[in-house]
Length: 567
Image 1 (cartoon, helix red, strand yellow):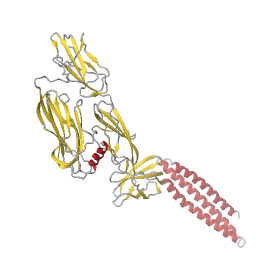
Image 2 (image 1 turned 90 degrees about the vertical axis):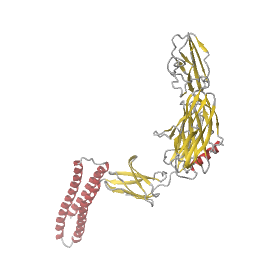
Image 3 (image 1 turned 135 degrees about the vertical axis):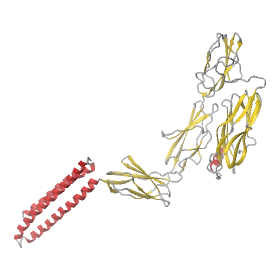
Image 4 (image 1 turned 120 degrees about the vertical axis):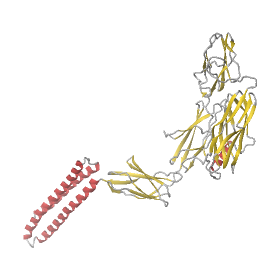
């Protein structure tokens, strides 16, 4: 049944019809009054939400434990229809906790009763009621917190012919202020996991006897006598709970008033709890909504540490997340593990974990990009995806990410991204990811490759082709002349002398051509040395292969010319 209530509670927070947001306040009624020690009185916890329908409320009421104790809590007449958890109180911690919902259409009004708390007056003084935390959620479909004010109530508590007990010894050494201190439990309002408290005090001048007692009653009188008097006391292995150490000293003038010192002990972790996902543990929403609620019977939950996977930037500490649901931080597509650590007010811990999967939306489609481009040229990448969505590009060289580029698609879903980083010569890959208006993300696309050629290699290739083509043409012309010469061998003997002369000229042209090629390559290398840039591995390999091919070409051309000369 509790699970059904939680589901309905979450449904009420997120599904009900949206309205505009207005301010709401949590109040006490009556806000003030005067009461005698030993008497009881009731206070209503109310909500004011005049301009906006609210459908869920939660809070923690704090009261002075030394002056008031809760007798009962009543839900009679409450505007709340469902309670995910029953209202609870702790007199040792001085708190009352509640959370509940109002079904559609929610509540609009100036004084909607949430619950009634009945107190008993324990001692005289001023008692303030306040909200240590609270939330009022609007009936707007998203659970907007519209709480803007937390009121307080002040009550005057007076004695009725008896002296009220003083739960905390005052400093000094007279009256009932015997100056009890504790090195192990120095703050009487805090909880400790140490169950072996130590107490110390200064003896009054002329002290003859000391009486002590430790127990759960704040009104008990010490009965264990120590002669000679002692000035410190250690109590071993107390069970969990709130205790009062009582002390009296006797001098020649008689027994002093009783001084008391409170200690709060909690050695037990919170109860085991589970994590549930509002929309299931698998979906496209990048920020899942989770529900978890740990219970600690003694000191109460202090806060939760929330961590997702092994991310060192988390945990995110949510000190007041004792009322859910809780919205996780945006996550990338894939499987994740959520860890929740519940920590009580003494520091005891209980953990829970749950796996969830963020499904990726459709990846962008790359429609064009340059497969090969010269060094320093602009790189443009285009594609299609969801309309008005954010597109991220990741440029990598090997395994190293060198640039992340971002753009936005137009209303038709088209996008063009100009890479802002200059790409030096090399082989690069890029992937793309889209994030839609909800914040949902796709997986990265399969990597595509861009080859950036060196300016040196590009210029050198152009230079070589220019002069090498001239050499090739000369060789072709020489070949044609040789064929014609052979044809005329038997007809015109004088042609032989002409062919030999032309062969010598062709040989000179060939020598000059290859000399110019070598000088051109040398000039390219010299220019690089002037700017103090070393040849890349690609450039050095190209030069080595080019020089080898150049020598082979020169040998072939020279041999052909010499063969013709021997005709």
